Amino acid sequence: MTFTLRSGVNVLFTTYAATALSNPIVTSRAKYDVAKVSFSGSNLPALVLLAILIAPLAGCFLSLTQKSNHYRKKDRAILYTLPLATLVTGSFALIFPSILGNGSALVQESFNGIGFSGAAVLFDIKAAVVFLCLGAGAYGGTLTPSFALGSLLGLMLFEVSHTFLGIAHPELWMLAGAASFLAVTMKAPLTSAGLAVAFTKQDPMLLIPILFCVFLTTTLHQFLTKEN
Image (cartoon, rainbow, N blue to C red):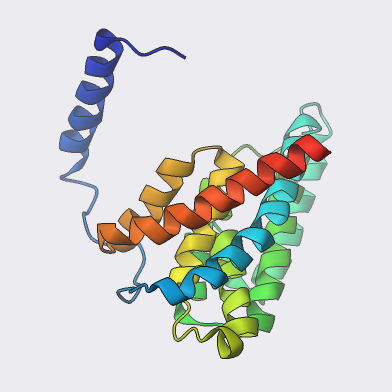
């Protein structure tokens, strides 16, 4: 990838033209309803723990989605594999409706508060459904599913550690978890941190702790990948 004055102008023009054209349709309101988040230096140990938790799990999710895409059904078998995958997904959705769609409903439900057990169950089911549908022949991205899974991991860490770490509210760890998980799966750390703030209309200063967690997560993921 190269950068030239021409490519820079093209990128800026395309970005601002797309924004101007989409403004009448796409709202500027927050995508997710999340309380305003504050941060203090005493919360850094929790962000370190979050990075240690997310790096291997996000790496595993990335590897499994790549394998699912590689072995995706493309022949006549798709005529029964995809309906079966849809049936399984729909069966889970009868009990956990937020797993449907790209993950936006799951993100909002996690921010609403579902407890450790609820977050753990939804994490497992959503991840499994993504692998199942991709392998069965479905096409789609993993941006919002990754964001959702990361927010669930942040919530789980809060539930098990807020007492001895002195964490009062889970929102920061959910946003940092979402950004860090997405940074690994999409290989876009700066964009992931920006999306976490933009999706929830947080103070831009919140980018500092989120980028700290993202940096630790991606660095650890690179170390683990090289080791393997």
